[in-house]
Image 1 (cartoon, rainbow, N blue to C red):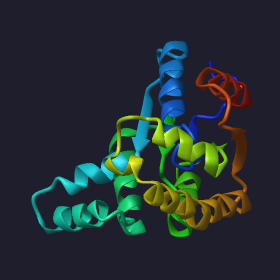
Image 2: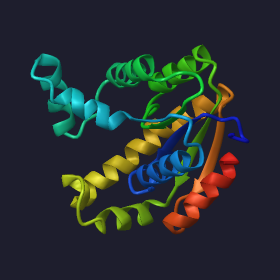
Image 3: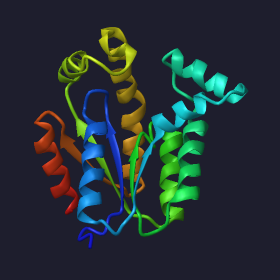
Length: 200
């Protein structure tokens, strides 16, 4: 049984903060600890990349936007994760979000959806200095093609400050449980802190 009662966790963090890694570790932990409960991972970026592969005008437009390092309009991100919710999720399932509320419009839709489905949720916001984030991204050695481009990295970090942070503030105003966690320690340490924070 889940002692905290929270079945929905949304990860936030700038590039290099480790949110993708921590989401995967949490998913693995939930599978092992609550084997009788479904665990869904809604990675919005992946859903949008899948949409970009469609051989139609929509796919071509989304691909062009993403290839140029721009943001896909909020309504497509909202469409992607709401379609997943509609098709796959029931009330007792765990749902882990990554990238669901990257702007004010997306945060509004996310909060409305959680109200509609009567799902309480915790937002895990991993914090990391810009200097440490750049070091981490440069040291990946693989991954995104723009990881080695410091200027592109800085643009991604600036986008987090300008767009995602206000989205988090909006969710907090709507009564969300926002937990800011230092992303600088080791992967294992951050994972333990997240589990403690969620009472899992």
